[in-house]
Length: 576
Ligand SMILES: Nc1ncnc2c1ncn2[C@@H]1O[C@H](COP(=O)(O)OP(=O)(O)OP(=O)(O)O)[C@@H](O)[C@H]1O
Image (cartoon, rainbow, N blue to C red):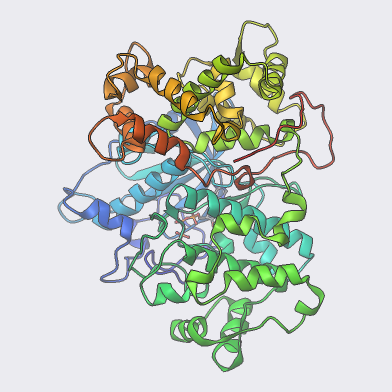
């Protein structure tokens, strides 16, 4: 199996290992190597004996068949005792130091996985872990639902990816360019979504992507965040990490940023298109052949190949592949990382465009994309957009085509016409056959819309998620609209949005259960760190987001067009 820096040697999934093997079965990190994120946890933190996660995994779930195993845990199917819904649970046996505290590397590894998954998806343990409070969700990333622990093990309950690994496709060798294009687009989306949330994956390889189900159009999900790190655009990381064969040259030189993920994506794209690795010539051919045949290689040879080997874009099957495909992969595999496109730019590349062209997709077909995008926003942005759309509605009396379209869809869903859409009404609309979503995904989309956790979605929440608010940016009235939205969030009119005002907006009269909720929301927009959001902060914050184009998300529309379109349609398109 391929070796991976930072996180030890992988064990073969064919080994029969009990669910809770002895901790000694798990390898140590290479000496002297810590991850960027891991350092966050190690610095100044006291040794701990437990994480404080909930107990009672066995009360809620039954364990079923084993799905696989990695270096840190074994993954089984977990069946929810009440609903019968199937999940994946990764059980990570605890590793104790001599004094009964948990080993530091184990702690970092568990927290890293929980932390990154929370950041990208679930908020179920967010407040207990107290690290990040972004409530974003992404449909190309495997959700983490809950975390449990007992005396011997931590259990991560995740979305079940029942469709198998991408690696199985890669092993099949080259197949249709169209197939490869669809898969690469899914992966590029996952990467762009993560980068949009300041997360560098650092371990992009076919083994870390799985299909959600067995349908030919199944979404692809990133599953392993064990060595991912937080990294903002332009921020550099200096610790080697990743799986050598997919590592970017600058990672070997220990000075890299988000673009290192784009290189790795390029290697996987090359594999999907050709069934081999790109390295050729004296430095690379052997590495390439050995790896594809046995997944074995010598690190030194690989590093030489990554840094120096010719990259082969001429041997078959390149003669039969499109020029756009070649250009795409070549642009990812540019050894000068400054010349590589960003993941978001990759989504605009002509090779990924023909099916992904969203410019004339009617509003109905982008509902799921809009919901996903809204889920990626932090809480401050979500309430700010509500206020902004309220301000726009007051201005034009909801008479514009955009409001009429949104109203029509909302009223279609609101079967009993009480002005609120229940989760089950939203589910019925989204599972109408028009969209491909699992029950738990629909549940998540509903929850992230329901900012007040009231169990229903009101009109203002729907509008905040659906609107093309950017079409108002730059208009003559823009400053007035922004000013009115700000005033709505600053009810005492003292010129700043305070923590108290924000708490009221986020959680209503009763206040927020967890103090972090307000602190994190405030941090989103408080640029000068003075504990309040001024009008200037507010305007800059609203206008700043540039990485929220709908193309980052998948429409999830049934390709055969089956099912009724219950969601209404109009010509409204994304202007972000
Ligand atoms: N959500 C999931 N749904 C289905 N199967 C999964 C899921 N997550 C993981 N698996 C299976 O379990 C295996 C091990 O999972 P994973 O790679 O996350 O473990 P790990 O200990 O983090 O491994 P690694 O050694 O790569 O870090 C995967 O290769 C896959 O076969």
